[in-house]
Image 1: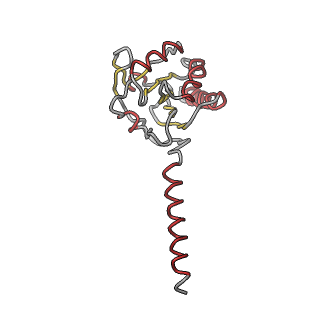
Image 2: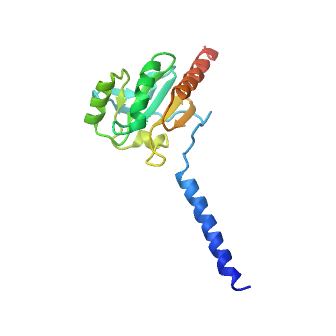
Length: 175
């Protein structure tokens, strides 16, 4: 029986290590619904203008965390441009990027929404955005300022259409 004990302990250790690894690397809150009020923030955009989430009170907001070096983020920009102002307002939070690179990319993409600076990562931390699982992360904030949904990873057209439909349904049902 003493020969089985080390094997059993080893198997338990492997199982615990596997569980920890799965929890550490899983997306945090892929699609969270109805999780309370959106964390408020105030920051400066890439043009030096003050921007507060409260400035968009009464609007559905897609808060998109992105960087110019992020390939999936780059793919999302044309889709975001197509929906900005059509039931939702896009706000882009620059994540782990320089203001210069981010501003240049936004100019290249003709992005009409503000690129928000987050130099200390406070906005990202408030919205549980980090290096794991990474960016892009898009959060839908409804007209009442509540977190309506969270999407981790690249938005595809069908994902964005669903978010806009949700924002529009929330907008029309509360008017």
